[in-house]
Image 1 (tube, helix red, strand yellow):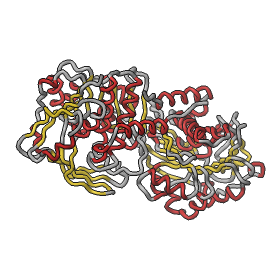
Image 2 (cartoon, rainbow over the protein chains, first blue to last red):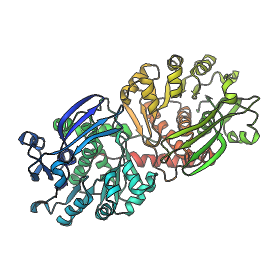
Image 3 (cartoon, helix red, strand yellow):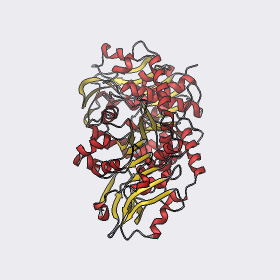
Image 4 (cartoon, chains in turn purple, green):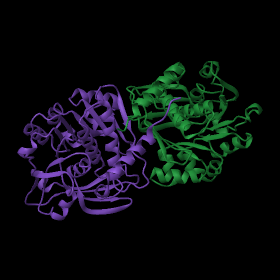
Length: 306
Length: 306
């Protein structure tokens, strides 16, 4: 009873430097992390663009999984490239360069057979393009979206138009504070829910995730799993979104309980993702490993009141 | 079966500026927050020093509670004064001044009747003085301690001597990273436990608390309660410690389960403390309010796996 998910976003080559090592021109991008993570739970239909340098070898990242690539365009030019460097405790990151390349002219074209997808995930792209995607799909059951400070600062009106059509917004804490223009996260969440999304998921990096319950009855909080080896945080947010939306699509309900579990599945996928560069760890991951770590999350957070 | 707690630390006048208001020369200090928080659960025996400006009116903060003040010295001079200013989201703080005054010559003298206290809390004071306290007490059942970057940088040898005699170290995340000289909290926790404390409690401000289980079997994580009104974070860490140690002293056992509950009681007390300046909220707090918020913590963090 798993429902297909339409995912729109970037596919990229990332170069990454952390205190623990370096990786050059490895596969990255929001749509990549999202779709691989979500594919453990449901079918993903990818809409993205790559250049001629993204060949058969690179395509293998999607192979052997329920990932439909009919919407992955290959066009003349180079694939999106990004380089970033992380600080001492991995909590700060500096962008060395961003070369949009073919992504600069990305105009998401949703294949006919994708247009009735019941779940839609709008990765962090220009809000105008997120709107174009929504204009092409037919009454999805659930729309989730990501965005970033860049768009909050430069395309707020477009973003607000999109938010009115979004059910679940998945952003980080500084983005939530900036979008709501309020330092207190509880008040920021109230303001953002008034913009449209009935569920807000606030990602806090190594501090975990805070979700407003769909019933409106307060928050659910999940810590990040304390890990001995955090190699590369790149893509952790998109991996979280993939596990979160993927799980929801697999269980097909949107109750408080299902959304709390989805938060834990998302956190679980993200906790694996950071254990290696690029999608290294996600590509070897198995469903039993996921379920074991979900149990570890329970042990990490549950207590008895006597 | 509640056990008495000996608490040594500062009593102070704080001046505080936050984005939401200002408070001038209000009562503060680690021993004050700790003892008022712990007094909801157990008897506290305070050892601290104040000046002549700390009169009957100020003493009322301890009144009507199981707080024994035989060890609170009043000496000529002024009480410790501190002024701090918080940034936009309350996550950063600048110290405007620190006037140690009578605290500069503080030499903790433990009254005879306090020396057999089964629980001891060493507030954040010079490690040499923490050692002097331990030299005066007789085989306590549990020793908990706090410290800060200042002592890690300036008195590391003394601090390491103290840590060999400490069961529970309660510090914040940047202090844990600095003490262990490692950016990864899991590895930092291993290194700190090798220094003596079998339990490490890492405070992360608005991101909650991470505790190593006494069994050595991983961590317990508690988020901070998302609050609409965070007025003043001053003293939240000491209030946490008071609720944590107070609860442990009231239940008298040191199992994994008891320590997880203690983490939640500590987080609960801290969540009330920040709702008003100084000890304003703690002084009106009731036990039923505490127990209700502990239930809210359960709702905030628990999920079912299906």
